[in-house]
Length: 249
Ligand code: HPA
Picture (cartoon, rainbow, N blue to C red):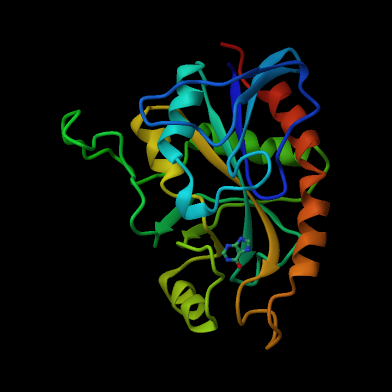
């Protein structure tokens, strides 16, 4: 499989895949969120996995990230793009922005964030100073541009626990820490991909101003959903462009 996509909130299937086949992978970690749908785009093998399940039934802190990543690896994914709806924290990331972060900060807790757990494998301290794959990021940025869209190349993704949204003071703190966007599912997905040595990058869709950022108004779920639908509609074009750009093996 040349490319695997993990679809986040708002993206539960990928009808653009030609001759799709649904594959439910049995994993040592229990069930993944959904079967992987594998098909073709631009002559490349592309797989799609709905991170929250096809009915959005799994909240961020309950996702079996290990099973999801293991499934894609088991099916031979050569690279993985995680698609994440996020809130914008700093000025260059207003709602409507498409960004490809280059760094992350992990604020999640209580999630199993390694395959080297339960005494089954050796203790591992995986190298993670650059959490996203440089080449895949580069291709992803180029793909968004090729699809005729604007993109912010870089940014720091803060992964929060959820499922609630943050307080304004929490967002202030994330801003002081240097975060640009905030989401709930970027970790441990990124580090599990790294443990499996699969290049991973994040396509961040900014669907709202994070708490306290867009004026004093509370976050409007209606506006968030509208922005999510608008940005999600661009994803097939971006994936098509990415499939065309990927280096041939
Ligand atoms: N915070 C955390 N996760 C999110 C947000 C947010 O504001 N918007 C979309 N996912």
